[in-house]
Image 1: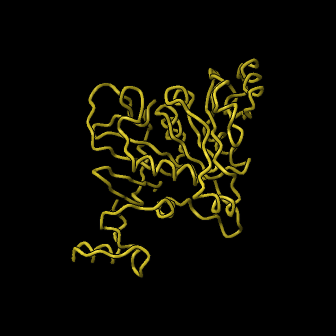
Image 2: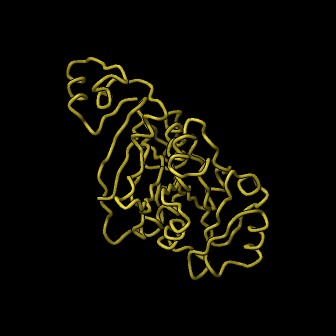
Image 3: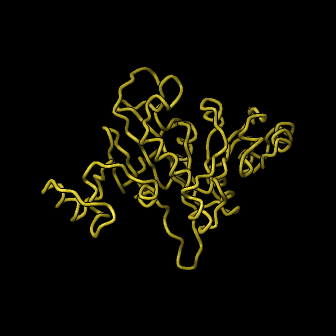
Length: 278
């Protein structure tokens, strides 16, 4: 893996000279133009959430992690696995290890066979020091609660799975979710979820480092509501054609949302981008 952006003095000098710098030596932090395997903690530094404010309060920060082919497909045959890579999955794990909660749509839970987030030994100390639990909670966004509550996501998570739904959700489905051990959080007046209210409701529970993994319909709703702070997009060097969804679906925004590039890594032709709200 190599860092392509931001370009530092050391990175530029290394690229011009064709040399290399041993990780851990002075100047090595910026000198990442040489292709090498990155450790999990190095990746964690690149993808760190913004620091808390001077008063110690941490404002909610919602980032999305998605993968797309060169021709814009977010899936192949209904799943993202076929367009991913080992490096993409390493970053996927790091982003989860940094998050308080993973927000995901019900359709993605069904299609991808979601399981509870697991504890990572490499991040146990840093999570404890940050006041986080052993693993992030999974928060499922759903209007109809059409979910199989016998799955491990609900029966055996390290931390209780959350259900984000509207106040008018069917009482019997709410009861079924709670019976399975999930915590139901109402974040909308009807059956659907209001994205801004969902972010506030999670932040009120101390879950301020938010990560969403889609799917496309949920991401489109978050974009339209203006609550997305950051997009971590893996560009897969593949072409699939077909009618697969883009990373974000739903109605278009009135004005395009402008984001700026924060970092860019590369491995085996895969580009790992990180964009922040301008």
